[in-house]
Image 1 (cartoon, helix red, strand yellow):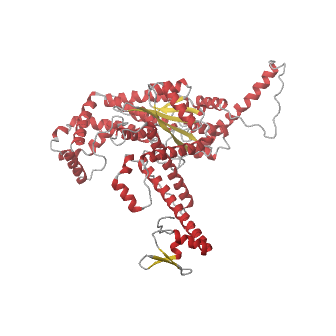
Image 2 (cartoon, rainbow, N blue to C red):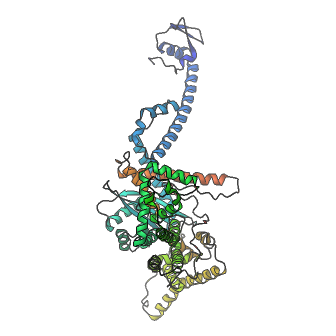
Image 3 (cartoon, rainbow, N blue to C red):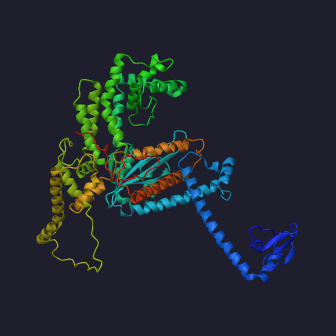
Length: 618
């Protein structure tokens, strides 16, 4: 020790005297000349008071160790929260170099060292690996799954990104939704390149490709081609399918003319901040609630209907604008717009319902049945109703040829054997498909662990009529078992059907032992939601990241790390909520749902009862 160290243990034994020119030992009273170092004092303590010095040094090490452990824990918590703040915002990494931010951190804790941008990137990659490990554990009992995949093309950024979600039902009959990541597509958006990207992502999490049962996507030809090439089921996203009907309806000349005026008023409000404030103030004075008529994104499903609804709700507020006459409608135009909204409102409600991840693909066919019954019961003399009827029937009929959509309806006890759901399909046809599926995907039981017998020798009489007779009888037993389950399933459904707001998985969880093969089928076909809206919400966030002037230099890997870190945070938050719920002594149930952020990709409770997911009554 050559320099003065105020933390040195020598000052426990020595004190300064004579104006800091000398030091005196408190133990024995010896004095030494003080030359701004502690070497003489340490030599004295080692020779005259070694035990006391050793004891003081040990006590000092213990205090410093506890302090360092506390500081290390504080630094880890602070850095983790900083990573989450950066992952869920548009703040650039270089913000940590901001002079005033550094001063702010020093005032909170002078010992804390703010992470550098490079350290942040390393921490993001480290957390991403943790997320992959966590998800790899969750997919351990995955039997069959559906994927939701879609692409995003930057208009000016010259980048094509594809995101992948996986849906499955675990052995506890809880619906799981997993975000596997977002990757830049190498080359053109062909079915082959998309297949390579998906294979790469699922291998990263240890998922066998053969466990993918199908995918729920929009009508993109490359995604459909990928599914067809791999013999996978394809479910057309219900929200996208219904929105195509509304697009056709909005293109009717009379309707399009009125909607053009509605769009002009919305565009004016979006451009003029002054008029927008006047408009809001007038709506507030009139106590008109709801979103004011501002333009929706061109990719927003049913945006034209939502804008028309907002326009009519705030129609009286238009007079607050300076040049409002050009945005008003005459009586005929009002009549056209009112009729358009009246006829399309059930379709809009169906889209809003389909956008929730709490839905099931089994609800698509009943939803279309209700829409077709509604529109076919209207006056067919108007062009709008004729078009809605024909377009609804066309897409309804398409779903009725989709085997997995029909199997999902059959496995949903709310809709199975319900009159009016299937227009041209018999329940007996679906029962045969269920038998075939159960037979083709029969679960192989593991062999007895105590020992395995050698394979039997081949008989010379294997091709005789008698051997074929025995083999056919052996194979018919599982089929009869499935048919017995089907008969009993129909009986229990007809005796007492679950309520429309109930969760179908709760039924199979309670009756899994009674219907082992049908419950396994239900786990496979009820895992998919109605739509791929989760991918669309994710791409809304990606657009903000890539297009932001503060984040537009992000690499695809860093963007993927950001999203995986946000997902890891949401996963931890879910675990904390579950733990808090288990520790809570309150028996009261809360019906309030936390608003879903674009990063909140984990459902709070997959088996909660839902009041709004069931389609309208038939």
